[in-house]
Length: 600
Image (cartoon, rainbow, N blue to C red; front, side, top):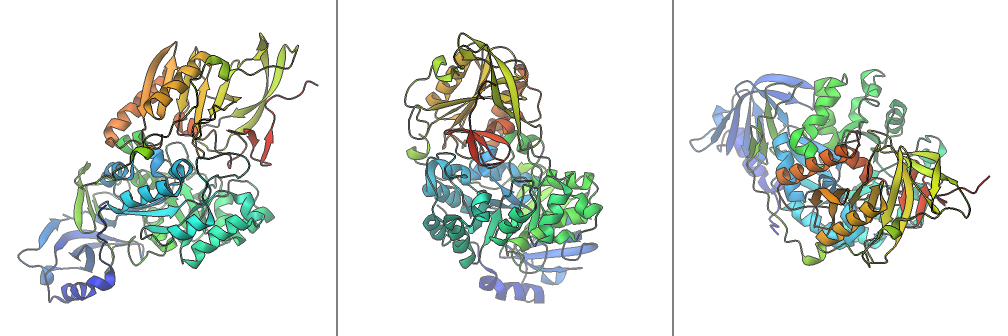
């Protein structure tokens, strides 16, 4: 691992002072641009930026006094010079890429700082997996800060993970150089009930002077939410309404508004600023989850900023929400998030603040992307065999593993059904009367079958249930080892034989996503690292992911980014119904409930 740290401000202060005073030439000067000052929310034309040692020495109308014969000149040509974009909350694993390849994908979109929570790999490989992600992150040309995962399992007693995170793990991670804080505290009932383990993790983070991430996925904004905020989480990205955003900000949290591949929560919340007039400094933009197809074809934080502007937000306010607000929240406003002396020289050149074309990207004083092409070296961690061999089923599965027995003598059965909601993380708790054939309950119409296959300890366990909303037709199945957050294997299908074929295929290749129809594989995305990520280039992974999307559509699914919905069906901390290796979970009450209701 490249462990050479980026020089601190005090380390290079003498040089910065010398350049700003004109006693030493700058390494680089960006000439003749419009300075987008997110400190004051101004656009100031006719400025130069002088850079030394990877940091900004000064921003002045004419930097010729600190320009020498060896100074590199970058002509802004009247374009906007804005700070590199920051993603305040995200999961690298959701891109199906390692940190190196994720960085390669997003650098051309102007993202120069990321705050990542690798709790996906923590569920599979524990603290060792977090360290691997942390170490590869530190090798990159951009700023990738790691949050130590807080909840593995996310809901103790309701799921079984490959590994469990302890307060001792959190305390150890707080000593690592790239750890910026605690990842999203998903066990919100644990915090509101003062669970000693959750409070110990929060305390270890606060004692280290770092930020506690939040995750409050409940519509209840009464005493339960007040108790959660009192417990210490400093931000939250699970809001879906204007009231959610306003309440979080009023209680001193940062309201993180997300636009991911499938989460469209900016438009419904940004009215707290655009219409209600709340101070925007406590509002932050983020992505949470973006798969590789979105990154390659649509963008990253530039996409989020454009969307916020399209929702009526002032462009400069939207940029603040993706730069200085994020930096301030994590205590890094003297390092990143603005174009000002001493800060890391993370600068974007763009010809328009509304459409935001990313024409040149500079990170730590080096040109890392131009006209959509990544120019940075993105070195890989040497992932060990243990990280590449994580799918253990115990035995080869057959159609019988996916049978759901009906009550004796029943012709129909009333089932609790997970209802998928397009473009939102929450599901609905539905009920359906389903037919019984040969003693087995069958899906019908919009309702098909879902199964969670245990893959960490080779127990051979399969838990079956029903899901509605995908629109699948014919004899098909889709299986994935990306199943937030326990990351067992989730299989959704209309035919038990196809479900077995899909599950066995993923065991064969070491994890990923596969779609089968009529005995044939339509698409395969291999994710050999922890069953979550590929170290192949983003373009290649994206191409396979697009084939996956096309295969889902060929099987009848018309939902936007339905893969993201599929991947969350086991996330037992977001209402209303989810599936775990222990059974069907009602997240409204945090209780296991029966799949089939007794006959009335």
